[in-house]
Length: 138
Image (cartoon, rainbow, N blue to C red):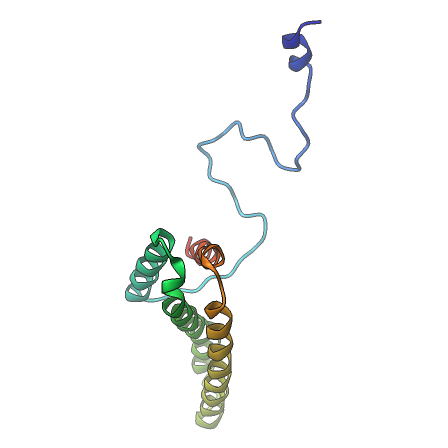
């Protein structure tokens, strides 16, 4: 039996995914997701920093800027997913102020944690964080 004959009888490996004969068709996410809208200025700032960090010889020089960006994106996400819907519900002044105060405390603690964690990352880890942020921006 020739090599050609033996390979022609093989079936493609079972990967759990459909064969990729249609390369022009975009892939469809398997899992559901939620994303939020943010300002054009924040998007531009994000893309500029991600590109600078990914292209830097020493990505660690951008640690502080990346930590600040993660904090800003998180704050925008909390506002989009929690504060805006709360305000639309019109629960009253006291409830809104309580929510604002609570979120400010959460963001302060979380900001400190984010700075510590990102501040200890090496170059490849920082680039990995950039990749995750880019995936969220699709």
